[in-house]
Image 1 (spheres, helix red, strand yellow):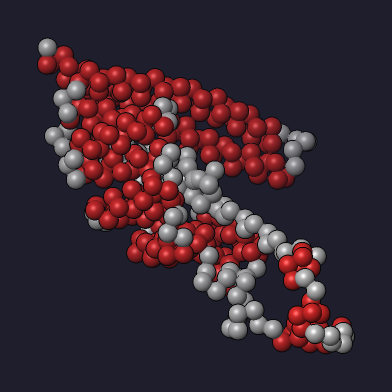
Image 2: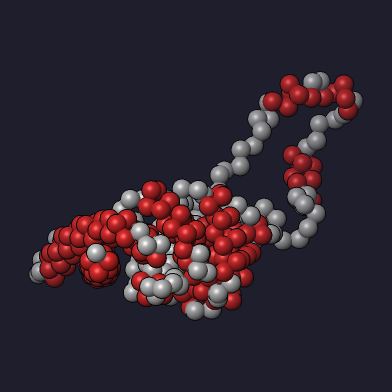
Length: 351
């Protein structure tokens, strides 16, 4: 049921100021994820709010197929009188599928519905209300719980600033599904913030193992290596992130800074120049989006507007999102430009 970022790095150029893209949080929505967000320092994680993957329906065996596998049942169990409908219903009522109390098979549809409600509340900035929905969802989950619910609870606790609880929920998700790439990534970000770098690296590497083509995770892993002072390894992962997603501005900024640390000024200028071009395009795109959102809001405010109440509300929400996206795009551009001018100044000084 998400997600997408500035990072700190150590080194002679004060990576703690310049490194971008750190903390890319992913979502269980494996379309996951995850839009990138930007901050001037370690970036806000990006939980594109997760939507759970709906459970596949259980397909019962074709009862007619039993005939071919069992052969002549009467030859195995002997002749017997047919049971009445009442007898059969009584037997079914007496059956406990696993011999335990509770709801061993759960109600997957109810779990999914409650997770969607919780996700909407997270989007509205109500993590406490979202957690209540997720807790309710667990009542309808299978006995061992639900990895996606635990994952969503981790995002909600992170939004509340209760990091230890968020860590615990991601660990619960991984206990159920060790190959949950998004949970490994988000847990890695929290451990990185706690300066538990080695454990963070382990989880980022696990995330890449199960989802090798996610550029955000490569960028996250590069960031932790940079924080540990291993700029050479950091550059490898930043470069991988750029190869996977050439428009990934944060990764290009980080790669440019890593090259600068390595003394590869030509390569650094090239990467940071590309970051400027891409971020300029992002600014232009978000300006158009913002103008369109403003027009929609103006139309909604006019007397006799044909828009429904829901459409008017949606227009207001779109304007807020467009304004935020425009601020982020401008911040990315200004940062890219500053870094590019910095490397140009260093190159001139080296001549």
